[in-house]
Length: 511
Ligand code: UD1
Ligand code: CA
Image 1 (cartoon, protein in one colour):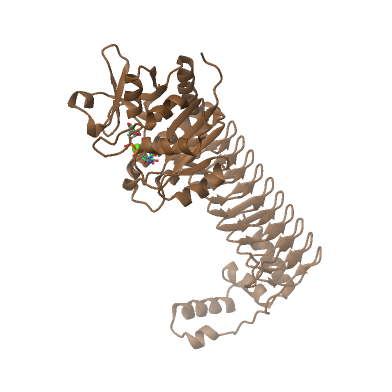
Image 2 (cartoon, rainbow, N blue to C red):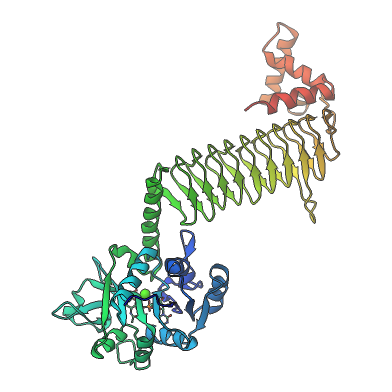
């Protein structure tokens, strides 16, 4: 009886989804890492179907383009007018006259369906040699859904839409999930005879059951163990409810796999993300796309990772990362922004209000505060002082900056690319560096400081600053006062080199 059958998957995705009130076709709305139709195709994956037909209509071009990306082997069949689910399946099979065996029909807007459930439905169907088998579920609230109507012996008699149902039928809580397995030949026989004699004037796929029953063909019902799998999505309120359900399902799976989620209700993990044992995800965190979090890494609170790989033992705190790599034991944030191809080697640090793009930060190197690092290679153990800007863009082209191993860049420096700071070199704080600094040299580039003595007293007489200055100057003439006047004097009269050394080392070594 259950000989292996060639299998064809038909996904119904031509509907407009009016109640979504969206310029995006309903089936393209995203849900934790895949579109609605992406989830549905994924659920059918284990069937290893010989053919996958997707019925498209509303937003057909957008849906086709998406299919080309996620399921290039799928064939789009165009349904110009949405004349009903039966019509949709009919034109799909007309487009593929060679199809025999089992035809699995999936609604494009039922995204929580599990692959296991589809496999079980097909096993039941093929095992019983049925002409048609419907996936059903017992739901708390069947409003709006097709009801499974059984005869006195409990056999499926027909599927009745809400709007065509009698009061007795409306009381039934066993509903049609819109997921079916059919025998291709027997489905074809009846599809041509569908009427539009119903409240919507459409060809209902569900009428196939009534017709097969009256022809004496065996039909079956496969009951889903978890009714939430069969929930459809008709508006954005339902989409949000589905998102919460899927979040809980994904989170539970990771917690059971040894990942700590400190606040599962505010942790949103795409189905495409991977986490290792003993990873910790703190609250208000979104892990999206192809992101990976290694063992013992701590991510969150308040972190968004998109296609970002975080190595074992790393920490990412209150930050946003897209297409980045964070090496093992590295530290990011709070308030860092990692952009595509930011690659942070092991034990490196990208700290507060630091943006990194298309750059390597070497092992143990630090960019602790207030910096922009674009198109740069920073060597191992280099230290980039606060407010350093890698000036990478000349208005037309981007250029690279190379900072050598264990180099030391003083605060508030502009590194004007293309430029190289050699290994072990120092750059004086406040410099604008546009020429290479040789290894071990101190690069200094800034105007010499002048102090115009008495300027405040002359130009701002009577101000708080003038009064404070006068007090300080009186104190300086008499008994020595606070430590500030001594160090100020030194800075004012120091050489460029001593200023560079003092300011650079003093400011950037602070952590
Ligand atoms: C359908 C079922 C209903 C079931 C429910 C489950 C029918 C008549 N009713 O109702 O019994 O409980 O699904 O969610 O089948 N589509 C097309 N072309 C069309 C019409 C629809 O591709 O001409 C697609 C839609 O885009 C959607 C799917 O088929 O993905 C279901 O259509 P929809 O109009 O949402 O059917 P429901 O009224 O929800
Ligand atoms: Ca629907």
